[in-house]
Image 1: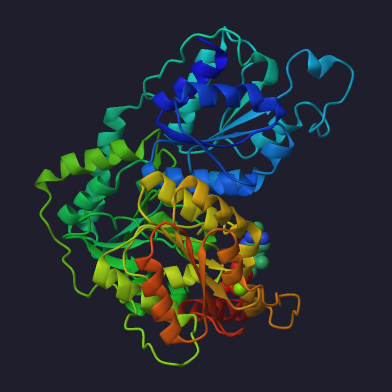
Image 2 (image 1 turned 120 degrees about the horizontal axis):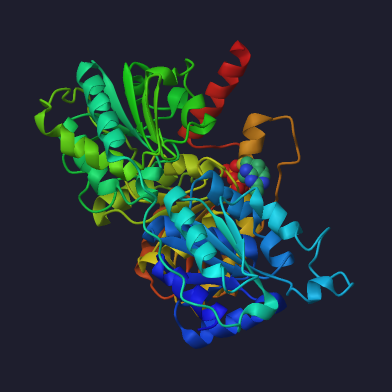
Length: 546
Ligand code: TPW
Ligand code: MG
């Protein structure tokens, strides 16, 4: 077998579903093998940032590992921000990047796409990946590739595989799938027992769920845990959309998303007044927890994330989240069910009034919740901007969004990745500013056979920037006529000024299949969702207090 074929088979054996790629001369031999072998389907897009976001969203949806193949330097470095987003938000993404062959790297000339040093790409990616390998010796590479792919899965973080241009056709053995890294089941059992004792002793425990629960495929088991413990459940900002698929929520007391001072009072109180937050897979970030009016005291919490578990001051190392959840379920048998619900579930606005008033940001969640009530949940991708706060007002539905790293440009390519991964039509929420970054990827929909629905909150500005610093005038973006752009690149555009037009456009967009639909909501500049308003007011108030 060749290096190229062996690598492609290894990616598939480790859980890859498809390859997102943009070619270049350093990876052309590999692209030939990708196409000819058909081991994994190839999806090409237009620009590497979009490619990285699409691959990231696809793996957030279908699990396994995501794969991008890009050329040396210009290609790979174009994807740095997308990979950084994946690292921050714990997405197992493999970056297969070309690099110079051993001989050409030493022939005295600097090569095109080279920055400071032949290894600049490697050094830059070291910071945003958890493991790396360059396939320079096909005799030792299979073991190294196996290690890198195992780390990708076990840590749920990006990894780099560099393929020198001249090595693709060299012979290489099959790459093994290594057994999972060992852990001590006794340590896991002890930890689970300590957790259960503390849960039993607590008077207001609350389960807080974040993204690792999904990354490690644990939603069903965690839902069962929540059901059997009869605990109220919150998601973090980043974890919004967890447990929304199928009937997982049946019997689970999901009380919404913790938004601190910007959130619903009862929801916020559940965590702020809890004597025992139980945080599964949580990123302890400012966006998730910094919005709390009081400083959160994590020492009283139970926390499991990044292969560690904490109980107060006790630290258990090398505890995979899956093993801990299993052990909790197993030891739970004897625990008397306590802690029943007192307050009702999530409050999400609905009931769009389809009149001739101008459409406002607050109408987005009303209209979409009406649709979800009638037709059931649908997978949603959101960008950064007020649209992400609109997404927080939606009924439980699967959501992929850069909720922690907060990069713009994610939404449109992510929505495409979601539909490619699931085969289900996706809906994307995006602001006009973020749309300007990666929106043109939509031109690829026709060729790829996908027809996502995109709602652009076009307030003709970087409104969030204005919200946080109203005196800056640089946030004005002008009118880009995005609905017309949609028509020009193979989709259908709707320019919406009133709530009646919004309802009509949504109905028409859902009714038509076969091309992407772009609804351009002309939101008055200065308007924002109630959730963003509370969020920015809260942050103002907190800053003023310090
Ligand atoms: C890659 C900083 C955060 S929010 C925002 C900026 C510039 C404005 C977003 O404008 P948009 O949405 O999309 O029109 P809205 O609702 O505020 O009007 N560069 C990147 N990521 C981030 N987060 C920024 C800049 C930013
Ligand atoms: Mg805007």
